[in-house]
Length: 231
View 1 (tube, rainbow, N blue to C red):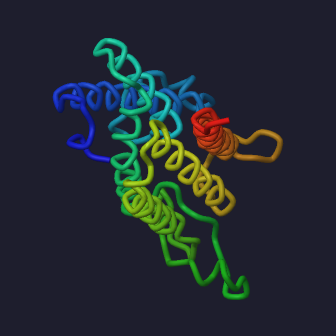
View 2 (view 1 turned 180 degrees about the vertical axis):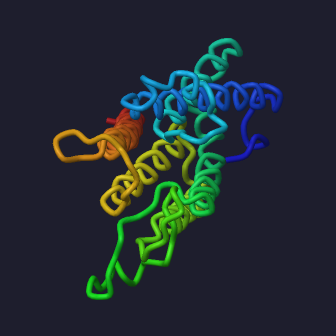
């Protein structure tokens, strides 16, 4: 899973990482602004101030893929192989993204009460983005824990995930699935559609895409093995 294991120049990997980071930042902000257009439509200047906060990881993912794809096209590199190289970094970064939300109070959880059993057990006295403290589901810490587990899994399987796209597909499927589940106990503002938060709908789609990629790679491998068998 490291650069040394792959015949790709380190400088080329750095170029792809920088392009992915730039694309991720731009589209993460654009996705957040689009999701909250009811506010930003009347405050366009603030839409261009990402340092005030407001990024969506789903936009970051798509922007990162777009940036990486552009760099791979220029460098004539295999995109899936580079996405595999970036997958552990994305999993590791997700841990600190959740912890940053914990410190800032964003992505806060629903309020809980002692009679709620499991929800109460995973709650802490936490503030929301506006500083109002209540017993809430510690969504950010749960997200950080899930991201850490996914990161550990990818590292633990790095010698088995040899087919291009497998590591990325596994990270995408699991990270999106965890984010989808946590959406049920989040209370931060987010537009909804058909009773679902739109970020949950995006997470469901991304998890499906990751799963489909893994299944496609598995079927492709089985087909190759079948062709190699003597008849």
